Image 1: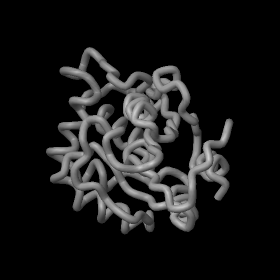
Image 2 (image 1 turned 135 degrees about the horizontal axis):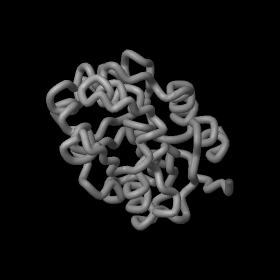
Image 3 (image 1 turned 30 degrees about the horizontal axis):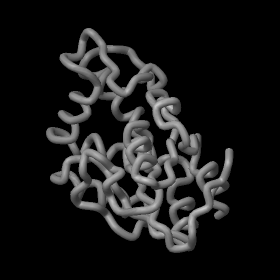
Image 4 (image 1 turned 90 degrees about the vertical axis):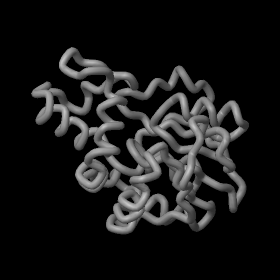
Length: 189
């Protein structure tokens, strides 16, 4: 990995699902209980994962969970390993801001979850446009390659937190990371 040093005080925009919160186990639990799919997290290998038992694609299921069961869905996620320590260390050098596409009506649940798990941050963006590259900041850490590509196009550094559905080829020039330790190493903290 080639380091892309950021100046001290730079702003890191950080996504929640798949980056700070480990969303796939909770999502798979719902898919297996609701649709009897028998899938594992590694089976969700496309951003628009589809299965004949689901009316639509995985994004439709996630939207339904966000709007109808946010406490169960968001509240039941585990933190991504090492995230609290990593963001604590990163905050010593950088500004850490949460930039998520979760529906705004669930932000209270999200903030409570962050507090409960000791995940530090400086700001929580209440409204995030579809193009995360438009959010003011210097770098984006996200699991969706489209968001990272938008950040790169806007002149930001991009970190793609690899998930089974992430496509590194869709965001050429991004730092592809597998863990928060990788992010810390790249940023030298």
